[in-house]
Length: 284
Image (cartoon, rainbow, N blue to C red):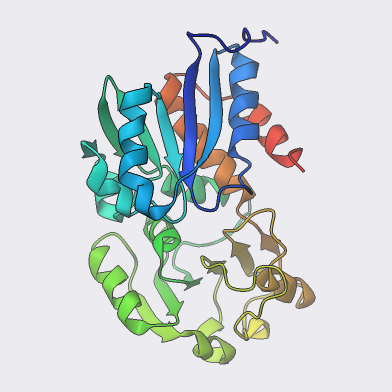
């Protein structure tokens, strides 16, 4: 394995904007990928408060960064500060990767690809199925559009406020499966989860020991997968599914796969996914 030279004036910098950002594993997996390929790049986390987002984006040009990943809470609001974006980013209304092309800042969304590919090894029969998605924030956008690609017949979208759910469905019109809106309290009823093949938690509810809405888990199929988009967090959502002896999955594999796509956008090289996965799993 060829090691890159130490940091110098020619070292290329990429990073990630978010708030909070201390938990991110992206630097570990991207820097492992750069080392694996012998590329003189470094990946750095930047805590960017919402009020400073515009200034942070301008710094990409000023400092000559190759690009950045974008995470909570900036995926939607960063769009107004960019010069262009992909058709997919426009359709989803969210950007998670920025590429600096000689001062032209272009937005991409690699979350959808990461979500769809993360499910490929789980032997789920999603075509023609019913899926429950919890949360109508930015994280839900790639999930809902990915479910359309996977041929899902029906989505039950659960959120605290129906108005936000309606707005999300309206903005993604034509890119998501037929969607029925319910409240979080409705998840305690068997009808909401009956016969579903997949339940996705796209919220931060239930992190640590915080309360998560009651779920009628026993109404799901025995092989129904409970997928939490969070990673490296002990969530009440996954604990409840495990007690009910349902298969579970966190967002780690999605992070690796969307990161691999971002890596290729910045470097124009195929990402060493295995090295990224190992670094991600060894971070803590």
